[in-house]
Image (cartoon, rainbow, N blue to C red):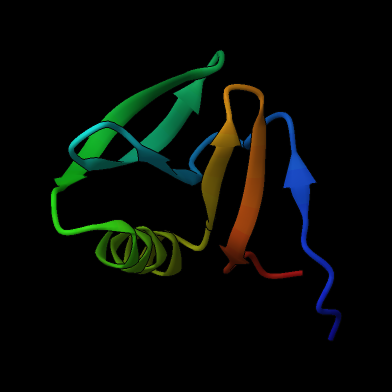
Length: 82
């Protein structure tokens, strides 16, 4: 197993993205055509938002990503079967 971080400029459909906003964290699901829908809004901080994204991704067999900036995402964890 590698400890290398994975970055991407696009997130596959169905995956979850954790995004920081001024007063809250959003967990969004990619629904296609570079669009997403807000699934969860968390005001308690990054850790609970990441935990929620991981729960969703594990249940759906997808992956969770953290938005680094407007065009880059870092993979938190993937639950896809290889």
